[in-house]
Length: 152
Image 1 (cartoon, rainbow, N blue to C red):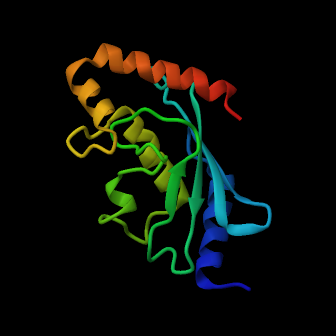
Image 2 (tube, rainbow, N blue to C red):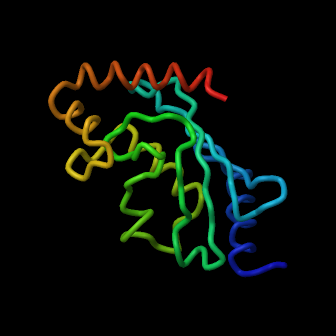
């Protein structure tokens, strides 16, 4: 069954393959175009450098009119990421626009890693540490990065 959302997701996937953005990759699960697996690589020269962080993207039939549900599968320590992996990011909520595609979503999440908003915390401990003791915060991020290499 080819619905407008499925056609759009095929187009998103084709664009990702033809013009992949740096540091992110994503593809639909074998039997379900509405459920994608993604990987975000920690940006170079940041505490996140070297990390490989897994996510899932769940799309509804009214995509791109509504944003997907995006969750980190990898364990994260970040002011804007909840313990369950969901992400507090404006473009995934009230600032969503149908012009965003999968590549734009993933690159936005990647830039959020290095540029958190501690004033809208999903993880209050990470937000406090980011504001009050950046060295300890960065050390904790490095632990998460190292865990990302061995996590399945």
